[in-house]
Length: 380
Image (cartoon, rainbow, N blue to C red):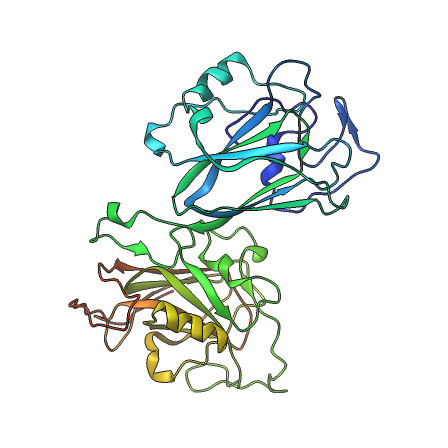
């Protein structure tokens, strides 16, 4: 949150809390009823309330969820949302907000935020009435029809009131034209547009988590499966120390950009008693239509389609593992990668670093004229 006109009853920072809103019937502050959201005072001056947010990542916005849960008698009756794509290095210095409950924006804060000219930003949602719904479920969904990249949004409420949560739903999108083709990039990062398009199990955490921004914050910020029920009663290892088990779990990712993977990082941080025994990584090339077909077929893809990037490799708990990519045809560009873990467990992060390809692979496969040669080396 960069700015809010007013935070009297509850600060705008509550809008972007990761957990769902809650209600504490007997909880009060010195300013009034404690509320788990953004709530402004009852306006007695001209105008309306609004706030400005910087998105966590640059990307394409598909929808908004404006949640007014528990604001049954004081929710904002109307709202609108504007957006802008701003260059970080050209942004003015915005004063830090600090503790805001009971406060309104100062003249200095109004002056600083005015440099962003947010009044002129594009409207993604025009002024619209909000519906309270049920006390514990006040979701208002709005679809967005825009292919532009956005970095900031402005939430307007008319004239005042409260909103519990604001969810900005979309996909990360990197400006690849501004990327040095000679520099490594994490081609599967969700911030750049990578996404999980299939998985076998996600009992305790979705695979999208492992391509998330920054380091994992806890086990909850990773991918974790249920324990497989087909585990043998007595476990045994092979000669290489790999567990001999019949089953595995997997997740398939569409890369943010087709490219050549040269470096793989698999992090089991926080998974101290539930890390996988081993893993492998494979890559393939799929068109958009082929991906759609594979999703319908639960990713039953012919084995010859997958090219090995990392062979079956032993993993350690609570540790980052770095590997050089291994493949028989490393000059091949890939569009999708599959992480397989044996027999089950959790992973906190997956990074697939390499070079983006300038060749569009949304059509049947064509061999790019690229040559790389690296060997396999495990770095504990």
